[in-house]
Image 1: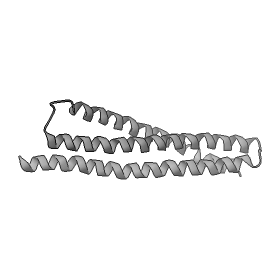
Image 2: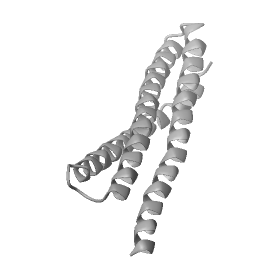
Image 3: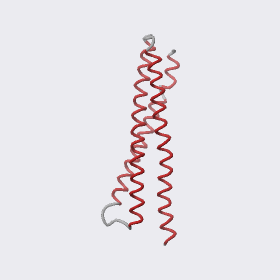
Image 4: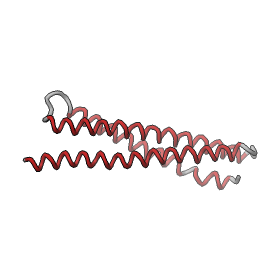
Length: 137
């Protein structure tokens, strides 16, 4: 295993972590905003139901982003281990750490893909609630 092979994945992992962290932060902000709209006496029952459904969906999305961040963080640690092992010629450790890097990144990307599908469903849920209100007005 060469250092070039290990180094190829190295810059991608922190970028993935930063992107996922932005997503996590924006989801948290949306959850706070929706929760404030759900305070007692705020809005009609139909709208309240849509907001509660959105919050449930966001809770699932937050978990997926959290796992994706965790797995990408692990991938970064494994990638550093692989880089270290390759640099100091620690025979079997470098390929094993690289395999763990790839597995962790794959898990993180799968979580991210599922969260992306759910974000589209959540947006459709929100839009359908708005459209329903506009059609009844």
